[in-house]
Length: 167
Image (tube, rainbow, N blue to C red; front, side, top):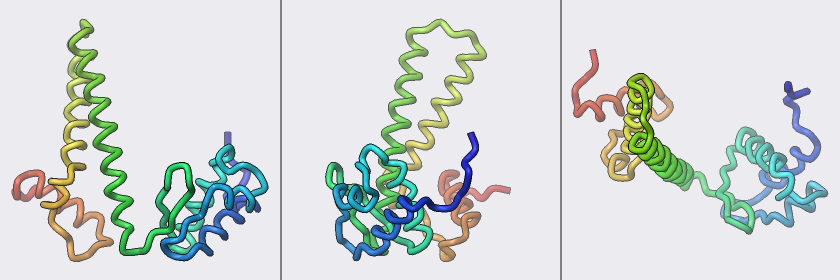
């Protein structure tokens, strides 16, 4: 199903405008968002999701969810918390998936091809979980050019390879 347009709807625009107008460290509650949209925002979360993306793109506004309350606008200096939260979710998700695959390997009688695929997936998940760990993040090198994705990735790969440069 294709979307008719990428343009913001009036509802999405209203949500984004409210989020952009929110001062740093202030909280936008679900009832406030519902009033702006004219319907229960918790039942129409897609409007909130689109509004958050729009506010981020247009104003660089970053928000943290406060469960059951709403969203708090973060100061720019706190944007790293988004990464820390994402890494926490990555660790949790990869741990669960790897454990589920492991239990299946113990219980099921898989053919060699399926076994190799499952072990390959477990290895990749375990590597991702390791890279997302806080102890690894503290030791990762910082690249002088923060917007250089290729140099940052090269530094991480070099770190993972214990300092050995790739040819």
